[in-house]
Length: 502
Ligand code: ARG
Image (cartoon, rainbow, N blue to C red; front, side):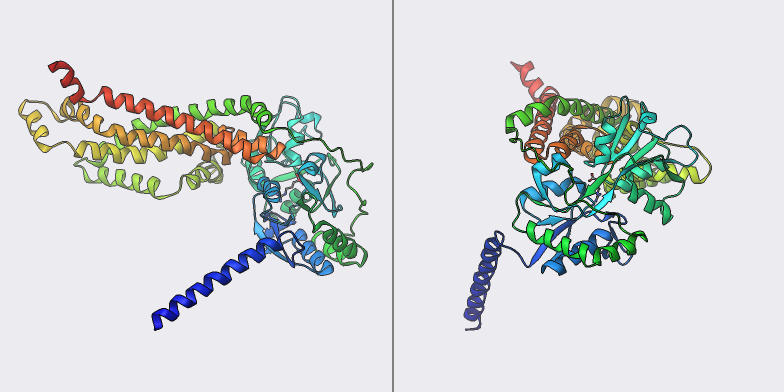
């Protein structure tokens, strides 16, 4: 009886869940009472986390006030800046507050509210840097920018500039502080705020503002919520709430805002490019990235193989401290995420060395190779150890009785046999490494994945780009497993013996 009631309860629970989902789905087309709003909370003072973990900032206060004025609630969702427009296009969020500049290109992909903030780009340099004040001075210099921002677009227009793209404004500024680039182009209020609050030392903003930009709230194209958001904005601009929020975060009176971001508000509507032409246009750049991915993978696998073999043998050493050291190395590199290791090596080590008075910066390629090879060496070491241990002890004894010393035993008897057994896991390791190279995109490395991200940040065609990027990775991994399969067949003694017998 109890069981029966349980099933009935379960059934009605499922049914009501289905209803909620359905109603939720239908509700999408209509005006919602709570809007899901994307934020990237690493852009103080517009959106950032309080020490308590709560999201705060100018944009956060603003959208809450807009919601109050227009009668909707707000639920925040964390999304990286370059993911915001794709999420709006996919309809997974209803709006975003991200200090996003209203631009012509973006207006093709999303609908913007009326402007809510006046800002501009500024050049930041290390304090005391001479000779950089204008865009002209940046010719041929190295510049760090945040992916998909107006700062990145502006930097791209500077002749001869070497540009490094990072996932967040703070990472670009850190790159400047670590001495790896000459300048950062970023929204002036953000850099100024970081300097004022002391979270960024040794950096200064130089020259005049490079641009005048207006931030808007982006919504999906022609969203039903757009009129409400605009009406809410107009209300708070008129009733003084806007000025209050402005005063709170910038300790100043707000400047006058225009009704529209473009002076002669004629929006040129172009028809979107077809998928094939998006892919074909992106292909040359993606292939350039593929070349770098291959370079990274081949060099790291080579170094990882050498390092890993040494560590694998050390792991079997009779000398205890050597064994422990090898063990500790493997545990560390296998037990911590590669992504954290990359951040640690690239962003963490330079300040550490600088703190003890050594001027030390990392070339990105070297940093990427170091991280990937150190990580892969740990896995290779275990493969090598397993391979050697899989050889029967009789073989060691036989070699000894032939008068071979330990090194000769390893070289002529054990390793040739062990290597054949190590091949399949080594093949796996290579494929893993090939895919893991995509992680070094976080240090601004323009390999295959980052090239795709960069193009996507300009044309807002995530599906075509990431599908092409995946297919290229797939082609690379399929080719390498073919290669390893061939090697395995070649080294298979059973096959060779059969050939001899015939
Ligand atoms: N205003 C600049 C742009 O729209 C930078 C915005 C970056 N915003 C952020 N939440 N990280 O391109």
